[in-house]
Image (cartoon, rainbow, N blue to C red):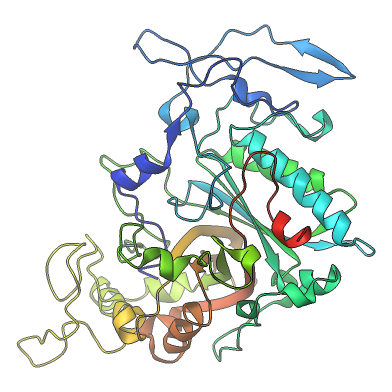
Length: 441
């Protein structure tokens, strides 16, 4: 678990958040019915540069003028992540403060053409809501829940489950890497909350912005697809700490220190399908393993802090490895304590999960915490909505999870309750929709 969330360094966060302040009023993103894009900041007393995105909402075939004065936004509100690009947004960017993971099943009779129309509607909606593109979604999709907010680093990411290909007559184009995940001995999976034809990941740094995006995506599906399952999560809000810091999970552990970084020389090779990869429509894409992992917090809380640290292999206070140093110090798996024991125990999570212990297997872990109340056992129904990105899950997630399932001391305090694997194609250019190379190729 110590590696299952994003690293919240200032450099990474700043790199992924482009401000909208340089956008012109005429070229500013618009979306009939998602009018929160009109407020991207004004020049205020503090000297912040910004502008008003003009607009109105289509109501009964007319345009209703907006009378209210422009309002300057904070950095969180005004920052956006472009929808268009070589790769889909929502993969390499650090996880946002709020998130929704939702899977859809195609309606009976929905064919390849209907699926293509749905992906176009979804892509147009995401393009508009994230701050780019032109109006494309009917105003009836707008609930105005987040009408006065900016983009708040919203991302919407789309993927295809294995069952999608059979239902659309595309079995011959299904990637080999989308083979079913093996059964792991420790799994306690609920089939109703697993898999799905289509998968959508929504993230934003504001809860209402994330919710509005979820509602628009659900409404745009209308008769073509229905929700199979939905999971809602959260992370630390940007600016909640005195300085940028790696986040903590619900066990109180600093979580995400050893995640691979885009600056690593083999990052693209490990995380993304190469341009020469197969199938060609997945070039620039990635595979997402999604797991709902319940943390047995009552049992965990009964351990002393010292025992918790031995299970993880890191100090709870600052995330430093028990082999010494600071949070970012490379873990010394060979270090011996004065009493002759390993400084990092043989079943410590960071040892068992380390690439060195798994023939170099690497994943980019992005996650949200979740809390769904009190379970039937009287304990918190809380834990991690785990998302792992990799170029090939058979070389990424599968070997690592096999090792963790049998040798990780942390596994006694976790329960894997839902699972899914999705092929997430590359990004789109202007006027394109996600999955176009698959559905029209």
